[in-house]
Image (tube, rainbow, N blue to C red; front, side, top):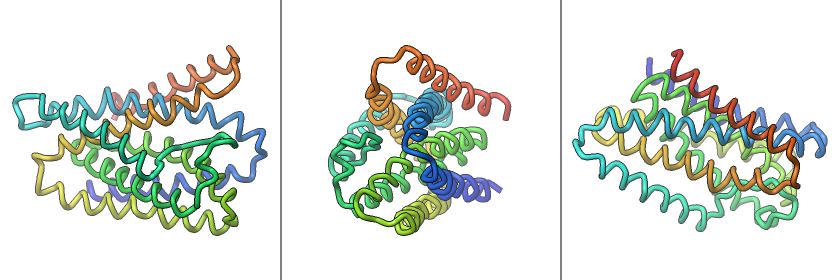
Length: 250
């Protein structure tokens, strides 16, 4: 039963995100410019809440280690690791036309996406092995974040010379790594329960790093607009409440 949850939600967070993001290509640039910051704000709230209220407490509760230092050291080194990973493969989610990443080869973007998708797959499987509600919350956060990311990635690929069909097909192929990683992780971790809390801490570090290093800066790139800031805060709060409801009501 747990495997079915893993496959279903890893598919939703990968293939579902690609389909949702590709649908926005039919919108005008003006409409995308308006709703992307709100989607990013929602993803920020969901990611931070999943990590701090869902993943980290569950990792601590399910750990066989009596001392918490090893878990938090894992968290710390994971943050540094994601920073280095971003430096190496330019794992960055940009939605500005002048951004340097949009001038890079499409293959680099796809390589970075594949690594990112593998991390998401590991996260989703490890979360469901802890509990169904943690898995659903983590998957939802990954889905919302992936939609925001893929919208930007589609723009990068199109600016790199890809046709819409080719951009969709290559992104879809890259997204399948999420499902593969989730299934492999499920079978690998099922017999190694002791390392699941450490994987969960790495996943929490991934969510927090993405929210604070990648998504939050996007919310500060727009002109000073008190109404926009208020809308961003509202959507951050909605993202937080969504995850809290999943964790509470399931």
